[in-house]
Image (cartoon, rainbow, N blue to C red; front, side):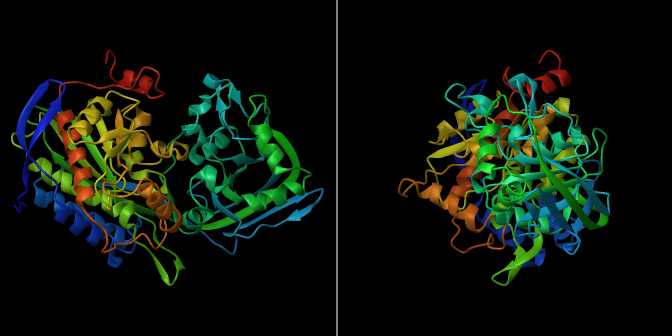
Length: 543
């Protein structure tokens, strides 16, 4: 068995049962750099699910788990994830909006994207009236209902994000922070529950948190879904519209988009029929493929049936539309870097002696970019019972720009795991700060979320933005530049200017937080006012 020597550091370990001084391994900068460079290389073709590059990346990670000394689960380092791939045929993607003021035919990819909501459908089409449903939310606990009328068989026009807070209700739908009601995934789920024929989400960069190019890139190639698992049938036709195209469409029905935005912000708003008829169709090539979550287990020394999961997705978007001649979406930061960091954390865990009391399961998840599919499949078919899963820790993007004075841990304010995070951040001279961009709903957009939704207390440990030795605002500017120019595009690739002291800092705090939880006897829960508390209480009655 190949084992890599790790540097040791003397640390003060903060835990619920006291404080002790011990030598702990540190994650290796060289390991993070090596795995990042490898996984983001062109030969892996952007690690899309169902491709040789994606499968090769999974095999690479499994080999490294084995070399580190992690054990397979059920005799394998792989958990098969069945997914259905659907590739829209650009020649068949068509939508026409006909109103009293004329006919509008937006341009595919430049102004609209469209796909079948049923992953098994080779063709989807239909005609119906367009109904503006504001934010498309039904939330009885907030006394909010955007419908109030039967919209079955209709096309819905929906605004992304949540209704804005007001002076009278500053905490409406989380205030500045997006809730799950604001996520585009929720919009389609609610459209399905309402029996809609189709649903179009209106894009704005500010509300969505990313430019139209991200929508175009994500919806122009093959899209994946898990096999239908019961519940409401998916909405048959799903799409996005650019803001400019939506303005023209509504004008054809005698409506003003700005005015409708205003109306939708009111609690009294109800769905508005537009008098516009929609005819839409798209044909898709369908294939069923098997991708893989990669799993490696460090068995617990005394309570191996109690499990801490650590996740990071290894997939990216594969090969897409060329930009400056480059069509490979390498996904270096997103998320070869996070996977590399998780692998370095796994190495550190194998050097801890004695092993922690609880088991630690490392999961390199598949198909995150397609809707958190690998994590969702694990939650549907867990290798260890969710009732015995103490905590979930997720990493999506390692710090490649230097050490920070701050640390962003999403979920720390929502559950008892926050105490572990605060203790370790303070020990490492970092201040725990809130989500820098709560309006983007990042908490609902990475692989910890399926665990959280099922009731497992979860943290998404992101790095900070206050970089040591850099001027104020430098980190915010760097993040904005990444979102505008590299996120989900071919330019997110390995760069020689990456530095790894911040990644080491990031990895060490992930390692130490997870280690504290794995050593603890506590069973942290969601806060009493959390939307996830009921699910946890149902699986673990009495706490």
